[in-house]
Image (cartoon, rainbow, N blue to C red):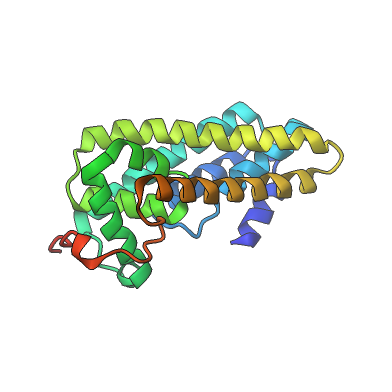
Length: 216
């Protein structure tokens, strides 16, 4: 995955790099190992110092990709459930699914908005929303807002740090990516403490709070 990230950053001035960004953001909606955050933040940092790629187009492609990926995950959850594939049945993912199912019933809007910033969290929430037949139109509206917020945050973060390193694109990109990761962890911890819940990685979730998985 680091190789994918390095390749895209190296191709920052190529017009087709925006389509790779779109693809990464789409796939990342249901397959978290794809590094969409680091790609968007890194390219924004490069754009801040070199002008390529176009930062506005980058933001649009990131938002469209994130929205599409989240809704594809919803469809996957709706059609096949949350136990079909081996990676879904791991203890970590099943814990995240149980947590997402409980929280969707309590505060669906804030959960969907916040989960977009946490790779495993957004996959768990999106798949669970589909598997539990969460209202589709409402999900579409919430994921549209969360995608725009996430893309704007990623682009602004990268661009802000990128202009500080005009003569060293790589260093600017690396620092922007590190800050993005740190902020993501901080957001996760704050939400966990405020809600008296557990992090979105699904650890230490009481079994009695777990919703019954849908029959596939």
